[in-house]
Length: 144
Length: 144
DNA sequence: CAATTAAAAGACTTTTTTGTCTTTTAATGA
DNA sequence: TCATTAAAAGACAAAAAAGTCTTTTAATTG
Ligand code: FES
Ligand code: FES
Picture 1: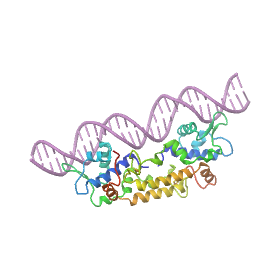
Picture 2 (picture 1 turned 60 degrees about the horizontal axis):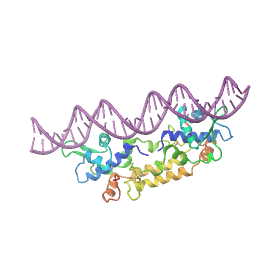
Picture 3 (picture 1 turned 135 degrees about the horizontal axis):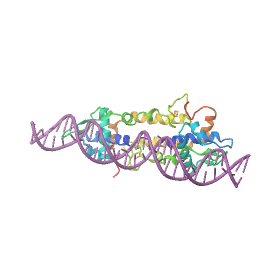
Picture 4 (picture 1 turned 180 degrees about the horizontal axis):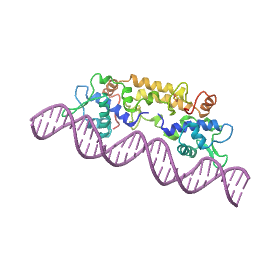
């Protein structure tokens, strides 16, 4: 469904939202531990998201990654598009070069419904909402 | 969603169902052309499906790949499982080692609905059904 | 301003996926 | 039986994804 990179990205964003909700910042090492990902790998992913304006960061002592109130409203769709591109939103399920109603693949009519559901879900789900459920210990970012 | 290998596999199975419906067989070259895939790559994929009993084949002159009436009832789920494993049927959407109701990731409750829809779709869709729509030129296996 | 801290940048390696090529095996039919 | 045909098998290569490591840049604080 999503690339590993994208899975880590989503998990990291939720973790950052949680850890920075009081206005503080969270470092790469804590993020890597918090979401159980390779430290240098998630660093690279977040730097990329930083350049794209999806996450904010600050260097130096007391520095780290954080999300402000507007960042907490970021949807999963924004993250997925930034990391994996928009294949999942508009690509053909059977790998034809173009998905098209006029020239549909055998799976098209079944697939577009699923694709629409995925799109809706990603568009409506905000990082902040997921972080709130995490705070209530209703969900988890890693398996211990 | 699916690997390239799996996309080619599904397209090839539908093409084979179409070309062998009169009891004849279809060769690798025709399959590769018919679904616009690399010839040697789809050969390897089909040999794999052959070993797993998902497609039938015969060597020598007049040989090739074919599907009998029972093979035409093969579901997409069978093909996807044979090629990509069952990650899409039971894996966690955010990459946790295990998907679990007791220890859900932040996306779990949204994700399981989509996963269920995908599973249902793959379970109910048979190669033969897709082939019939292809015959009526309602759908296509390649872009020209 | 100097030492320290932490992200940014980027080179590099490993693994997986995708794709190619050659040789072998089996079936057919003249 | 022997030449031909076509898949099976398996080695090999290229590209992409995933992961690691080192050096540079920027912010903070004493
Ligand atoms: S053409 Fe394949 S999903 Fe639309
Ligand atoms: S735990 Fe992530 S989808 Fe179920």
